[in-house]
Length: 320
Image (cartoon, rainbow, N blue to C red):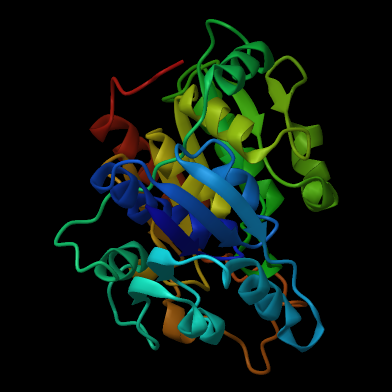
């Protein structure tokens, strides 16, 4: 069975679509899946069972990347086409069944909207596929016998990033001798180009507690490291969804994005948001590329209390 699965450029949305992909794999024997996605998300699918190829949709002028997708897929008769991007070119492909994400969406969680593409009555939880190589690499990278507090202090735009000094204070409180993650090591994750954004946070963590992997590992290795972590705290980002998919207790920090749409998915997850609601948080003439953080009404006390509540609810889930 030949399946074309067109998913997101963004890592977070691509992760949220993996449950749908896993459903297709489980329901159809002997599948050959071609996955089309953006370059940032492509490594997520490297170990997918039944993978035929990944078509990386590098953005091109005049949207020629869609013409390239058509050229690479027109010669196949597809059994199923799932297009979460609603690309017009997939209308011109020969297929038995075609499923798309309705335009305009609705007020449901994004992961629920994606499940609705196949009219599923229940969401299939996001899932990533790895192998022993990544698990063994995670074992080498992380200190043995220590609990790991994983932190995602960055995001794809500055307005939704909690300030470095807040992360530093929260980490200190959580990992102190009286904290819920007493004497844990701190794993920092992010892209290499995000390092300047959090250099002061990196410097604030004692060297014997710090595992700095920002820009140093790929997504599947990060996923394996998260599976071995005791807890994750981070901004609304792809890393947050990666942590939630790993099963590790995950606390997402929200402000200028809607948790009603993008809260991490899973029973081991929670969110805490700014006291200023989404509808009132944006200043006049807001520009997401240049705006400073809009997360200041989320206090360290609020984040600590939310972390403590999630820890109590998920106690015993530590996989390290």
